[in-house]
Length: 160
Image (cartoon, one colour):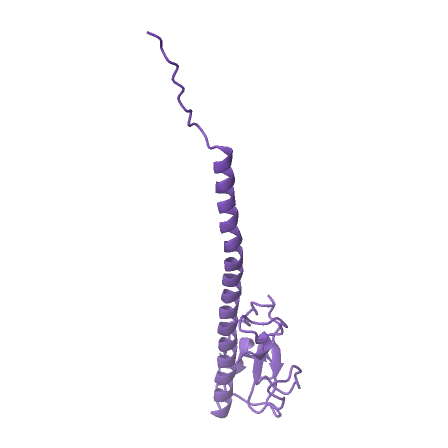
């Protein structure tokens, strides 16, 4: 009786074809995730920008309400709006308060997530609503100084 040599296939690793297919699939998946990650980062920055604008505009409105109610002293020519953003952080002395207590409207000036700075564009109540230059009389509105466009195509400086 003659014995036949039986060759068993050794399955210790992957063949070259299997490696190429696995690498191709991995490369395809990674190229799909990069745009998704960029989209998510931009979406998060836009959400943070909306929040920062809402926070500052709300502080400006609270300042205006306090001045209209006579709780704080109004400087001539400001129409009851703050003269700059630092006033909202530093606070304003209450009228008729002997202790000199101050009312503050912001803890800090928020960082513009698009530009990464605390520099915001300002508009006074006398400025044109679409103007990118500040008259300096008061702070009626704020906007991002970024020239970039949002995902919907609108410039960040025009966000309401």
